[in-house]
Image 1 (cartoon, helix red, strand yellow):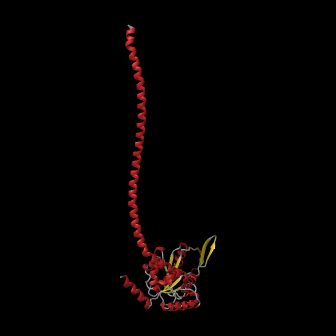
Image 2: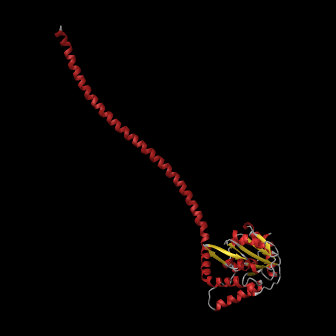
Length: 320
């Protein structure tokens, strides 16, 4: 029985072995193909990723092209607009060059005006400035042919602020304002019409301006506080003589003690603040100040002249 069964089973076992061997060969081929397929799929995925990246880059470049086109249009407009500015800047550079050359004589004339011409009328000021201008030309000192104090020392923004505060718009008053701001001595303004008074009160309102008169009983105390705390003081209605107690203030007779600046006012020694400002006005139309008073202050004539009144009326008409 065993032999009969063996004869039937043995061939089947041989065929099984052959089939398994062939299966192994086919499986090996299949694995190779699967590996190749995996490589192809990976490469395809990489190409898809590259395609998506390049597509995004293309979209980004298209957007950049639009932005660059807009920038180019704006740049062309800007260049076109600045083309017209070139002439203006060239002219401005030329004028600044001339001002630089004429600076020596202009500052010399401005210094003389600030130091000596404040007390005089507009006609005398112009006459003196013209004489000084002729002398500068004669001595070959470079200076502007159309010298103006406001062009040399004036700041348009500051002048506008003064005019808003009540300074008359005529050139004589503007020159007075420039002299006030550039003089080393405290101004004493001849102001029968009260224009300077109004201007100082408006201009120094934010600086806690104190208004005093020599007739006030406590005006010295007010002055001491202003000197200590660096505020402004307006001394109104001064006569032809100045109280001797004010002399240290007028001459700025300060001294340093342990690094702090002090001033003696009467019997008291008080700390001196550099922000302190002192203005004086008089209502007298034609005061006569002695030389010892005139050298201690910066005398300024704020009295309206026909020419100044004409300029002011013209300014009011133009403003309306």
